[in-house]
Length: 131
Image (cartoon, rainbow, N blue to C red; front, side, top):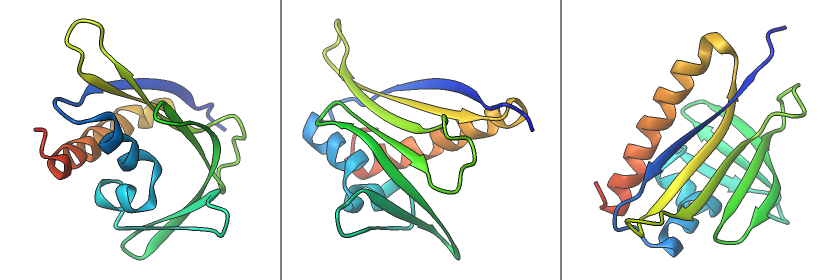
């Protein structure tokens, strides 16, 4: 078993507001606009199911700091320590909001994982009108 490596990537989000970005990363409606084809949640909103074409994956929310960060763990991931997290913070100089993504990938899949995130964030920016 290859150990997964943690990685961080950061995107500046232009004129997007904190509220609009928070909705995009923490609400099923927002996530369905850029991250998956569709998203649903269980009754207490602790497990989100993401749908892509004919496949789906469940992710459990393991921590939330409102309008700051949200961390998910893929339910079927055997690595209990791995997660993906969205963090929002304001950049000192430009005052723009940055979105930092933390994720885990096997070393030989890291470049693909980063490319996928970059494509997804481009879609988010399109949806927000901040390209």
